[in-house]
Amino acid sequence: MSAAAALLDRLGRPGDVRLGTVQGETIRRLPTGLAALDRPLDGGLPRGRVIELAGRRSTGRTGVACAIVARATQAGETIAWIDVDDALEPETVAAAGVVLARLLWVRPRGVPDALRAAEMLLGAGGFGLVALDIGDAGRPCPTPAWPRLARAAERSGTALLVIEPRRQAGTFAAVGLEVAGRRARWGGGPGRLVVLDGIDARMLIARNRVGRPGQSLVLRQACA
Image (cartoon, rainbow, N blue to C red; front, side, top):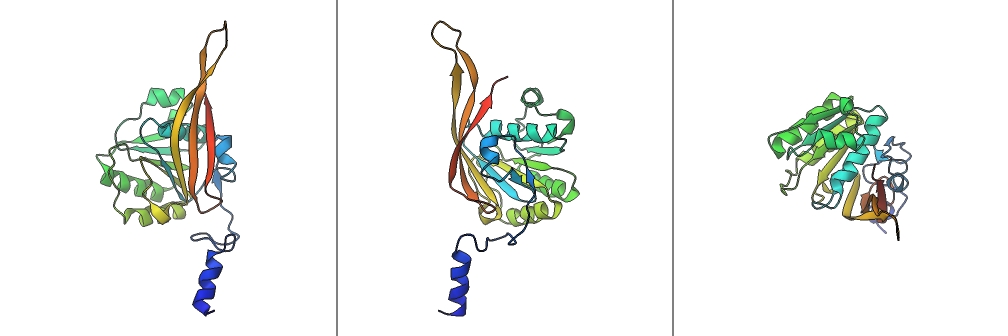
């Protein structure tokens, strides 16, 4: 076997070397507060990395993002939410537990402005998480944006959560989460009032450069 072939064989063996991760590197985590997600992610979202949260409209994608932001702000983190569609409702996210005093809401004029804003916020530092909400229009991000954002996230140690209809960051994302759908969870029974107990969202960890991919899970969110 040639030296090049031996190297490729070694790189291809699981548990030996991972692209973009220094062997033995300790990666700090941002807990999501969603136990079913934190467990397979070894404690939460990796800081200093790009994390994609993808799902079609009404799959529960935004609800999952709100739960993550709520947990982070309650823990004292300052969060930026870049909202391309100007769809964020402060009253709704506050009811979901987000501490508005720790949330910077950015409303860009389009995707190019949103990407510039994300890079600037990551470069500024001081944020536990920057959420880049691309919206539902299906606008693709220019490919050169992803290496710039990945480098900016790594330098700052800030987690960049990209909320989008479909994953598009490719190898520049450390984690790729796909929300497949959601269903209501009802309580009560015969002779009793039927009430909405919560929402269950089905999710697949489609990509995980800092752990094991391919895991399916259900996120259970309670109704207040």
